[in-house]
Length: 309
Picture 1 (cartoon, rainbow, N blue to C red):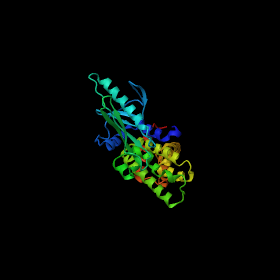
Picture 2: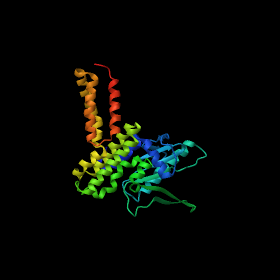
Picture 3: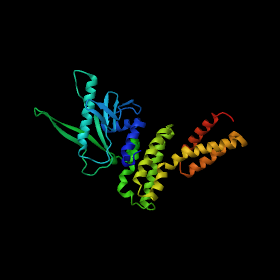
C-alpha cells in the first residue's frame, strides 16, 4: 500500500475488498434505503468511456442508479473540474450503451472529504453556460467525514469511515504525551471502537470483515502516529493490532503445539492445554470473553475435522 497516499489507498482497498460497506454510506449521503446486502456492480477503476480512460476511486451501480465517489484528503477548488469530467464521461458512456434516442443522466456523485475547515463548502459547484445563454449549475456534495461521531458511525453502520476516525485528532497526535490524561482518554476511545466493531462483525460471524477493517485502521493510525511512537505503542493494541497478530500467529501456533502434545498425551488433552494457554493470552489483552469463547469453539471444530495422526 502506497504510504505517500495512504488514505486514498485505504479507501480504494475498502471499495474493492469490502464493497458492501458502500451501501450504508450511499444511504446516508443520498437518503436511500438500500438493504445492507443490496447487489453492487462496480466499474473498473480505470473507466473506459467515450472521452478515453478515466481513473476514479469508485463508480458502481446499485439497482438502476449509478454512483460515483471520490475520496479526498483536503478541499481542492479544482476538484469540481475533475468531478464534472468524470461524471460527464460516465453519463455519456451510459447514453451510448442505451442507444438512440440519446439521453444523458449524470451519476449521483459525492466527495467524501477527510479534512475540512470552517470555510469548506458543502458542495462543489460549476456554472455551465450553453451557446444560447441557457445555463445550468453542476454541483456535487461534499461529505465531511470528521463531523460524523463515533455513535453515528456505529448506529448508521458507516464502518467505511473507521480507518479515518483518528484524523479528527490529527493536529494533536504528533505532540501528545503518551502518559497524559488526554492520551488515556484516547486509548479508551480506541478500545471502545474496537469492541463495538467486534460486536457488529465477529459476534455476527464475519471474522473476515473484522480483520479487513482492523488492518486498514492500523495502517492509517500507524501513518498518523509515525512521529509519536510512544503513543502508537498504546494506540495500536487498543485498536486491535495485537489481536490481529494473535488471530494469525498465536492461534495457529497453539494449534500446532496442542497437536504435538496430543501425540504424546492424547489428542483432546493436548488441544485443551493449548486452548487454555491461548484463552489466557487473549484475556490478558482485554478481549471480550464472548469473543474468546467463539474463537476457541471455531478452533476446536477445525481441529476435530483434521485426520488422526
